[in-house]
Image (cartoon, rainbow, N blue to C red; front, side):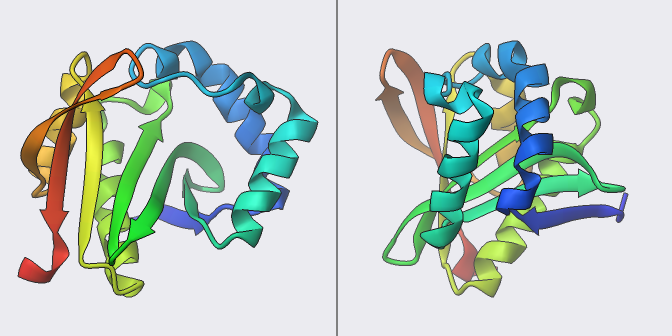
Length: 160
């Protein structure tokens, strides 16, 4: 499946992104924390994405044949360590796309001279935990995100 692309998010993507997020809202919220309510208005989402792009945030869309399959973000960069976040649409789960997306994110991180990635996974999301483990991430501890119990994983990129 080499036809997957990790494309930088742009304001032009917002209508398709909005449709993707709305279609998968219940699925995502069952596995990760909910988006703020402002995310569910097209005008507001356009402003959010425009601000993220202007700030140089490392936000990507996972696409195949121009269709959005998921999102990947490298955020909160501090000391060459970024937080990895990803979400794959419900109809694309269980097909290896998340593992491929994480592999593409690792390459994007290296291309930007980052030397480690960290990710948090809700305890009720064992599939995501397996994706990280298959991608070389190691469990480093437990944390809470609001009321959500999570595990924290890390991958040092300079060890490869």
